[in-house]
Image 1 (cartoon, one colour):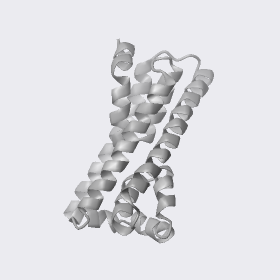
Image 2 (cartoon, helix red, strand yellow):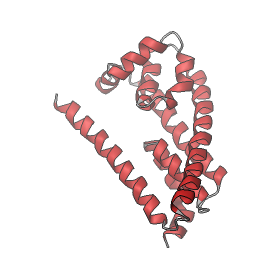
Image 3 (cartoon, helix red, strand yellow):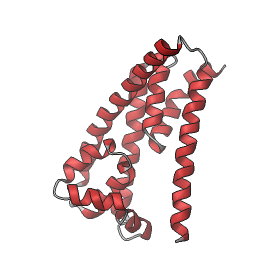
Image 4 (cartoon, helix red, strand yellow):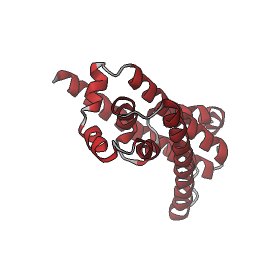
Length: 187
């Protein structure tokens, strides 16, 4: 039953999951390709789509709302300050690499939109290429992880276990994000 649900709605879930979280969902999608529940290239395209849409929308919203207090708070975040110091003179490099920097996925597009003069089209093309490389790498890593788990644990057939682990990780990520948001608003 759950296998049919994954086959029917898995790609949509990967697009949404990669838009909200990213790495964990894309890797889980790769594990599901190893299990034969989803095809490799459609999962890669779903991961790329979710990542690209989020990065691009974040950039354009930050550019439009530069003076909003939440945007200003994101730009003053310690990671944003470090990234600005390292990459301010090379915004195109940051646009290509931020997806691979832990914690940089939200901060970097905001910083690029507000603290640099990178053109919107240049950013969109660079982040599209970066999302494509990221999508292929993460899904391939997931497929290899599935292979490793199969060899280490034997052929596991309980798809629910894989999904439960992914959901727990995603829930922990969301709870951490909510906690940071609530804690920051209280100060």
